[in-house]
Image (cartoon, rainbow over all chains, first blue to last red; front, side, top):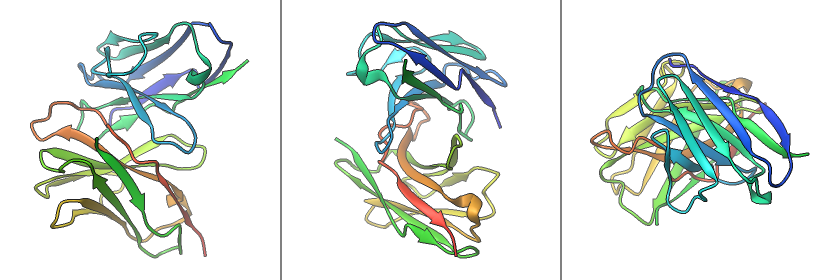
Length: 107
Length: 121
């Protein structure tokens, strides 16, 4: 299986901050790297797919970048509704795998 | 707009079979793969497997010996069966639409809200 290592596992931030979350794959995953937002009790939502493409309706303060095995999710100008858990996921392999998640909390 | 909703028993005894159903509404299941994913307490997400609308399946090797995913004939829902459960199978179980049949659009969208299944005697 392709192991996805995400960091940090949690972070504290204030409204307006810029936040960066990294995801490293144990082998190359091509363009098949996705980012999701998850709030407790709700369905996870895809924010970014294929490394850097913003899903329709997702604010432009979310940005995905990277290539090969190293990827980044950046949230600029953090908003109150952005406090959630974020996780990366690869679909390069037919066995999907996920990062362990990053919980973004209010400082 | 596609919507998914999981249903099934919230409590299963050890050694028994966990059975869940994902109801798909708002669109046809044709042309897509459909996945099951779970999240154990305090742990990350684990992909369980997927099924194509034609019935072809692929499972996580770590669970393959205990998992069956099937499709109903009306193609409005798909199901998960996990046999010989233990407390380690306690988790929130999610269903989600996966990639297209031609392997494009390889992301999970949308997801259901999830259903908690507890394995306990």
